[in-house]
Picture 1 (cartoon, rainbow, N blue to C red):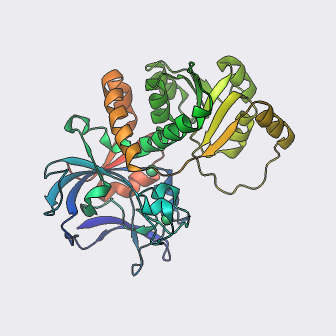
Picture 2 (cartoon, rainbow, N blue to C red):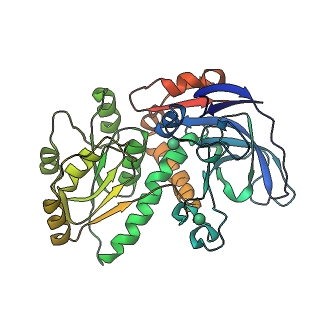
Length: 361
Ligand SMILES: [Zn+2]
Ligand SMILES: [Zn+2]
C-alpha cells in the first residue's frame, strides 16, 4: 500500500510502498484511512527537526491527525464494528512497570519520556491506506461528522487543557463568568476558541496573521472578537478585553506569550500548549511577572498530548460546533490533497488553516 514516509538520515520525504498491516491479536481492528490532517508538527518532521522511525526502520510513516473507517475487527473487539468511523489516539505507553501514568492509561502524563507516538516518535503514523490498532485506542465518531472529524485530534489539545483548567480552578469555590483570551488563530487556536465559547467563556482571539480578513470573518461569524497583534500591543489587548481569567496559548511564540503573562487577571490560569523552536534568549521582566503571580494567585500550566476522555469531549464539542456554526467549522479545513500530492499539503502554508490529505472517500 502507499504511505508518506520521512527518511531522517537521508533527508528525504516521499510516497513509498509499505506492507499492508494485518491483525495480530483478537483485540485489534483494521481501518481504512479516510482523512489525515497536517499540522506544524508534521511540517517540523518533514523539515527533519524531529520525528524518529520505529526500531528496525530507516523511515517513519508520518501523520497523527486521523479519521479511519473500520474494515475488519478481531474476535474480542466489542465496542466498535465494521463500517464505524473512528479517530485514533496518538501516544502509546512506555514499557516501564514503575511509570504509574502509563500503567493507568494516562501516557499523556508519562514520567519517563519513553512513550511512542504514531507518526511522530518510533511508531508509524496514519498517512497511508490501512492501519491496524488495538480497540482501546479507537474513538468512534458519528457518521454525520464525516467531513470535519479529522479536526478531533487538534481539538483534543484544548480539551485536555480545559479538563486541567477545571481541575486546578476548583481551588476557587465559586462560579462566575470567565473571560478567556486565545493566543493564535491557527486551527488549534480557532478550535480552542470554539470550545471555550461553547463552555460559556467570553472569548477573544489575539493573533498575528497573514490573512486577517479571513480570520476576522470566521471568528466574527461565531461571535468572537479578533484582535490583531500587528496593530494592538498586548497592553491594548488587555485593556480592551478586561481582566483575563484564562489564556489559552496556541502559537508557540514565547515572546508574545510572556508579554501577555504580565496582563493576566487575578486568580487566573495561563495555559501553554505551543512548543517554541530555540530562537535564542529574549529579555523578560521576571520581577514583574513573579510579583504579579504571587500577588494575584496566578497559575501557569503546560499541557501536551491528550487522554481518551479528551477525544470523547472533542467529539461531543465538534458535534456542538457543527450545529451552531456549520460554515465556520467547515472553513477551518481549507484544502484537501490526494495522497500522491501529500507533499504539497505539507509544503503549502495556507495561512495557518488546516490542510487535509484525503486518502479515501
Ligand atoms: Zn497535529
Ligand atoms: Zn510512561
